[in-house]
View 1 (cartoon, rainbow, N blue to C red):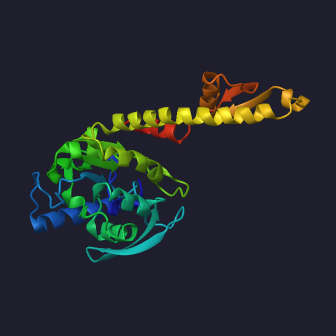
View 2 (cartoon, rainbow, N blue to C red; view 1 turned 135 degrees about the horizontal axis):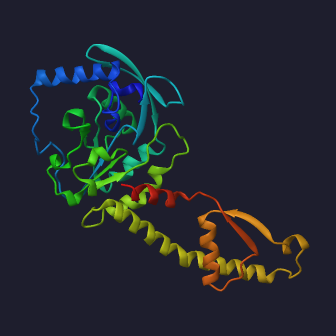
Length: 309
């Protein structure tokens, strides 16, 4: 469990151990704040959000989805913040997922973007100001808009007051969309990987999804999108292979002993796809003994992740 439980809450682990000092402090702060403001525990539909109904809504989680925050400058960070919660000062180190600003800017052209976090406003607001300086996300929601359930907090999408066919949530925790699982896209956790390209690779799918009549079920639509992309790429790849073979046939026929020798290659699924395409196009394939690695390309990996939603 990360020490930054004072900032946000990892619901899955709450019942597995006793809360630490930071978690108890956070719980106390939240309890007294609710008591002071006499928060109504019942669902309060109709949160003040954009309701133009001209575009669908995309709800973005913050922690481990767009950023990763902690109390120590471990594993690298992009910026640090001094935040004050109940008159106490905390220094937070924040790592930003690569491509965040472009992701939000592009997404805002197709969706009404809402940032919804289980974090406290005192922490979340300055982080959102940095990763979304143009305020493309027109609405920000925090812990007090979440719903308390056994095991933690969740985000009830009905509170947005829109038809669920027009609402998508991207979150690294299934707990966050447990009430509306068909609306949720389970994204890979982000901690500090600077080579992470999840947001960039996700944009084409989200743009396509914004044009569908119903975003549900997101997981099946994502797999459908990947299959469509794969199908569209096959003819293009066949053409490239055909052109390559024409050029090869124009080269001298004499081959060295090294070229004629059988080669053993370790290939990934993309290479297997190319060999299959050569066979379909009746093209000559090199004499290769194939050894498959236990790995997949990015799309296969994403398909595996979303299939486990």
